[in-house]
Amino acid sequence: MYKNAINIITNALLVSMLAVYPALALDEGIDYKTVTAPQLTETPGKIEVVELFWYGCPHCYHIEPELQKWLANKPNNVALRRMPSVLGENWIMGAKVFYAAELLGVIDKLHVPLFEAIQEEHLELNDADKVADWFATHGVPKNDFLNALNAFVVDLKVRRASQIGSELGLDGVPSFLVDGKYLTSPSMTGGTENAFKVINELIAQITASKTVTTPTAP
Image (cartoon, rainbow, N blue to C red; front, side):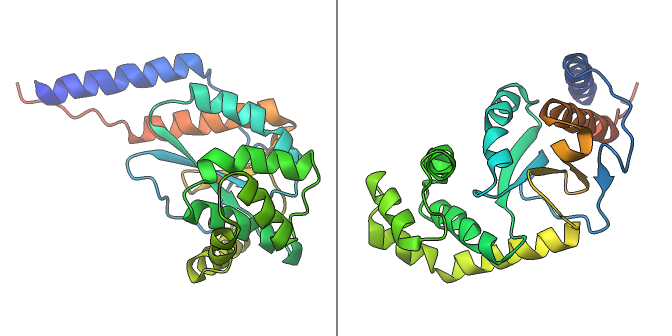
């Protein structure tokens, strides 16, 4: 009886989600692509959506309000994780800044303000000293930030982000990796609104594929 109740609840949640996010007819290779090198997810028990971005990218900055709206309405079985992309030498600093802030435990608080400072106030992303001064004005001691920026673990994460971008065949941002298997972006879908519709449909399909009704004994 217990298993049957769980199945009923799970299926009800799936039906509810599908009602909120109507099914789309997705075209693989146009709306999204299945990656040839699937990535391990880092959020156990959740369908993980990874935002691939760069602080120097105005499109990544302008998608943020829509991303926040999506976050407020996403299904409970979905988790967002951000990953800075490294598609060139001048992207390395942006990734280091992100992972330094993560190491210091301030990324959730300062991610959006940092984006705004870079895109609206023209903070020089590749000037470590100026970026450290900006963090200092937000309560992070300058030396603490600079030490984190040069930490070994930060360097490892930047290298890994670069490797993942290569494995995905990533050629631009913002992009979104769904459940480690499917890559989509506003440039593929024809706009930000459509990108989130595609993400929602992929989530619905993955959820449906993972929903298994277990028959109960009479």
